[in-house]
Image 1 (tube, rainbow, N blue to C red):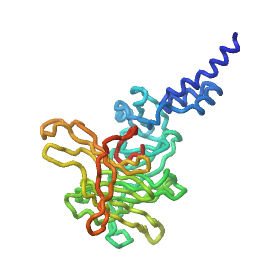
Image 2 (cartoon, rainbow, N blue to C red):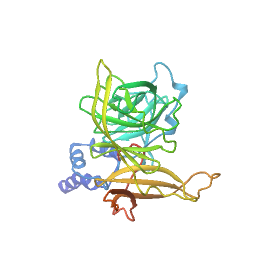
Image 3 (tube, rainbow, N blue to C red):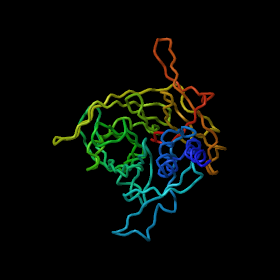
Image 4 (cartoon, helix red, strand yellow):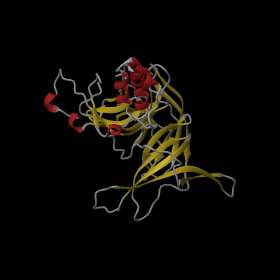
Length: 342
């Protein structure tokens, strides 16, 4: 009688593991015993959902505890666990930090002091990599930088999983305090980012248009794609990024994809945000619209529209791009955030 009960208890985690979506809960469960660890490793979560975490507001800033010998660490609440607090141990200081993005396999992007000391932290390993705080501006068709300005990173992504040893490039949308009122583009190399802070490079062109503003960035099919507020996409493919005693050199191939049809516009329509998402190998644009557009009301999300790229031949035989709205997601669930890989 005891043997069947023991066998049933041993097989119990395989049934439970299929109903536990949170990575932290699955990890804690796997530490109970070897049989539970084996069962968790061989069971799939109920749905393919990303690990959704929110910084806990009560732990973001504790000025009373700040001091030379104190390290401030932030806690996270898990959306998949109905807001349960996870005390994820990060050995680096995260107090009073501004979180502005994430990347696959547990990387989070943050800025200490809200606007500087940009950093990558891994929630799984505790590893830290530095991100750029300065931008070297280059003139068109000139590989050498002309001016160095401080930056605030608004959104960033990478060509592959961030590593300081293998070739990995970063790209971001940044703001600079040099009088330019529109975000700029920036590129950098992650090589050596574990020991020193990289310096980003960015072109000075594309910023003369007063109506142009960059909204999001994603790495898709070997190139960085930047989405503008008008629905156009600027594509940058990096060929070379070198830093030596002579200076820093950047070589890129630029393609501008202008779309005949962009985000919805009208007197009663207010576009709040634009996002780029890769789904099933296809590039999508997600538009977040404001509900009851009136200037004196608090903005609320009214709807999301999803568009995919369509191509049309003109009378001259040229290809014209357009954003065409998807009437159905075909069973997909999209999670959007600027510069985040979900």
